[in-house]
Length: 68
Image (cartoon, rainbow, N blue to C red; front, side, top):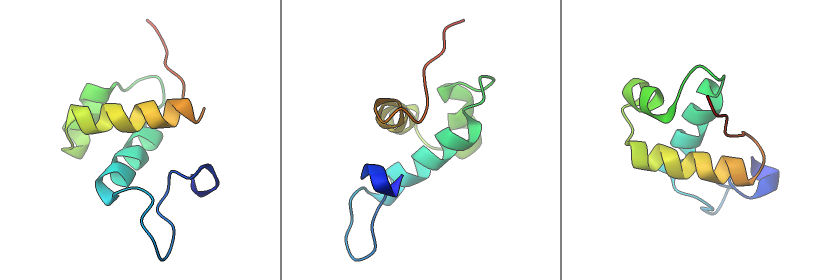
């Protein structure tokens, strides 16, 4: 994530730690079986924070949205 500019770099803050934590949760559970709501339950982060993190990851092509 660092080379995409979405991970906090040493010596300066590129993105806040809550957003980074949300991105890690999204990346760890983006397996096609979990949605933002189930990740919110597990992580105890708000759906809004997770949704924003997922949007950033999707824009960077690290994850993709699937439809059922």
